[in-house]
Image (tube, rainbow, N blue to C red; front, side, top):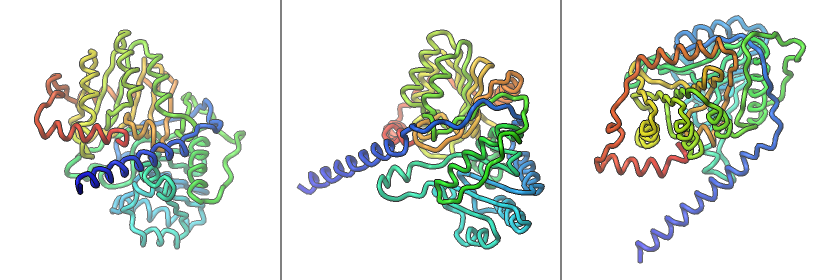
Length: 397
């Protein structure tokens, strides 16, 4: 009798959780707004090393003269983050408009006392995507995964790096951190600031004036930004994959695609497209390998290639198609990024810059290792149990 009651209660909880997730998704992803972004021309620099990124970012912040807007999923509570926070306080004292927006869950470790100190020193600080009611469970899962910085409305940054010591290699378990981040000047910087403004106001911040279109400086690199606020990233990726004729290179820390994208990749293989996926050897979250191996196995069985980065932890998010299209941003090739999180994607159409990114990707492949197909067919009881658990959780991974 007690067992029956417990099972009934469990079923009720599962039903309530499912309804929360379903209706929460419906409420937050209507895609009924007109996308404000268009083709832009900017100057860009690809940065793959955290030390180089922080050196450039700190220099640009230090030289700022009017405003600084920073959005990160994670800002750690460590010495590395302190360099940025102290500099933001310094610039606020100089009279600049300084705004810091962080994800409520991702930056939960940032101490409240430190946040209050920032505010007292003139830095405007807000948390994005706080949980609440209704759709409590969905709100908890729906994170702002974007990383955007805009300085003086003239210089912008976006990509995969967050702020913390592990991103410059000071994590004994993960080691060297490999990621792709873009420094940008030119027309596209306004779009970065538009997205920051949307997230800022959504989090309770006051609106502010953006740079006028006539004051934008044109660059040479053609690109187009896409935000999960206006488009389902899964559909964007499917459209790109369906157009591939020669090759598709995917770099991601988590390869847990939706069925729609997995089917699109397998269909591309059948029409002769080369598929190459690069993932990290190490994992920074549990059950990632158990969730990704079945998908990687399908790629291998279809004649594709899978490589595991060996030099440290590979966290880059890149999608290269036929040397004519390349996506870099915050989007992991997993269901959470593709369907749930707030994400930021940039599609480049400039051949020279695409080939530059491809060159870096191929260099990273040289630091990677491939395994025989049997490696992905583990049969131990422990593995099977973890694999089953990962399958149940995969919609949220």
